[in-house]
Amino acid sequence: MNASESPPGHRLRSRRMKVTIVGVAVAITASVTVATASFGSSSGAEGATPLTQVVPKPVSVRTTGNVAFDLDRGDAVYATGGSADAKAAAEFVAGLLRKPTGFALPVRTLTGGAKPEGIVLALGGANKVTHAEGYQLDVTSKAVTIQADARAGLFNGVATLRQLLPAKVERQQRTAGPWRVQGGRITDQPRYGYRGAMLDVARHFLPEPDVRKYIDTIARYKINYLHLHLIDDQGWRLEIKDWPELTKTGGASGVGGMNGGFFTQEQYTSIVRYAWARGVTVIPEVEGPAHMHAALASYGKLNCDGKALEPYTGFVPSPEGRLCLDDPDTYELMDAVIGQVAALTPGPYIHVGGDETQDIPEADRDAYFTKIAKLVEKHGKKIYGWQDAAGSMPAAGSMTGFWAAGINDDRVIAAAEAGGKVVMAPSAHTYLDMKYDETAPEYPIGNSWAGTSTVEDSYGWKPEEQLAGLPENAIAGVESALWTETIFGIRQAEDLAFPRLLSVAEIGWAKASAHDWNTFRERLAAQGPRLREARVNYYQAPDVPWPLGS
Ligand code: TNX
Image 1 (tube, rainbow, N blue to C red):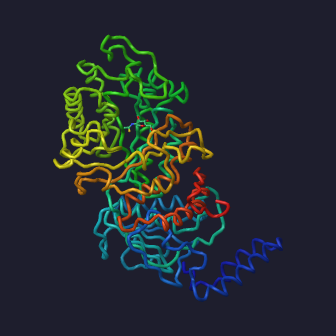
Image 2 (image 1 turned 90 degrees about the vertical axis):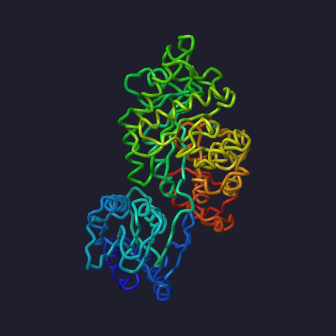
Image 3 (image 1 turned 180 degrees about the vertical axis):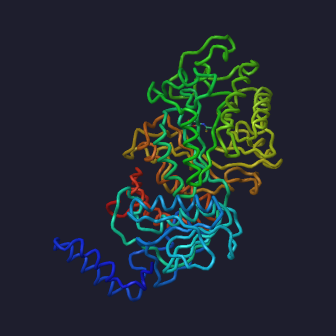
């Protein structure tokens, strides 16, 4: 519906009928009318979020001065006919908007001649967007049209639209409009195809609703991969059929003996589906050959001496958590785990760990990952591992997670030169478990071995400058990591992740020339009320000018 064309009195009249007995409310409504009348003639977009306020920053934004779109009761969400992807994006956006608006927002098929009123998800079409993740978003008085060439582009367009609607759109209860979007056009595509968020559910288990909430938030900022750290010394968090002790014994607790738990295969599948329905692909991590104390405590036969370890609840890595590298049982376990995880995961990658394996002789490390790589290939997936495993995994088609210079650098570079890709997750900037500041209110949550990290620190880095000699075209993208040794539950997780994860999202999405802390912190501040409305906990970092009350 048309904000600039529709008589403002129309909307106000119906609202006034609802509030006739509340004199004060009538007076407020009247004063809004005056405000709209006095400024509205020059701008039909009164009160709308500026198109420039999006995080991560879009490639190009053009505002059409006095045009705005108002989502109304009679509007629908249209999807290109015959496309399951367009329908999925349409269902997603309709599902988001129905609760706060109270509108029916039926999903309809887009037909050739008709001029739709509402939200349009158009796949393909005349104005081709050339990047698989790119989109074009056009706002006229009649419709918001998101055009893309592929599913991912549509979901990225939807993430942008969410931020252009008023912050109250994030509410879970029905709320009065207007649901106004500034007129104009955004044309956008990412710098990198990989924008990941790693979540450690092993150190302290985070149950399904917490993981879903995390997915909801990362999807708002166009993060397209959720890397789930499912296994570590302190906990085994995924049911593996025929190996019940892994979760019974290995999943019973976490750091400090707290927060045990695990996902059944059904729960894991439902997380994978939930993520995909929001444009996020799950990458499961099967750790090894170190950080495997939970498995070694679950089965005696996995230990070189045949005796099960006591479960480990310490904070630092277990000194005993190394698999028995020559034992066939080790590879029987890994075949079962990788096979089952691959079958449950539609995404292309399996992460195979490699954390803290530098003290394993290189030949042994190579032998282990050669066997693991064969299993990953046998089960139809691509291999992803921490930089410690670089050079031990076959380079072609692989992905390496870089977290600090000085570990295996030559092998990381050699793998990149031989066709492997590298994900940049420098711990000093992207490890979300680092404290913001030793004295900040969230203390004592968080680690500090990579230093403290302010929001500005999380934004102030360049992927191409982290490892001298790394070919730039080998960089697949960026990843933020939230390790949970110090974290209990989603509120603490969110406090550390937000807003810093938004910095990493922008570093990964926006082109290098667009990175600018001073304008970013303003756009970031505008996310405060949105996160608040969505009941996402975030740290009110002093380096960001949060609006009053957010
Ligand atoms: C490093 S860098 C780790 C994790 C810890 C984290 C704590 C890397 C691959 N591993 O095992 O949880 O530090 O900040």
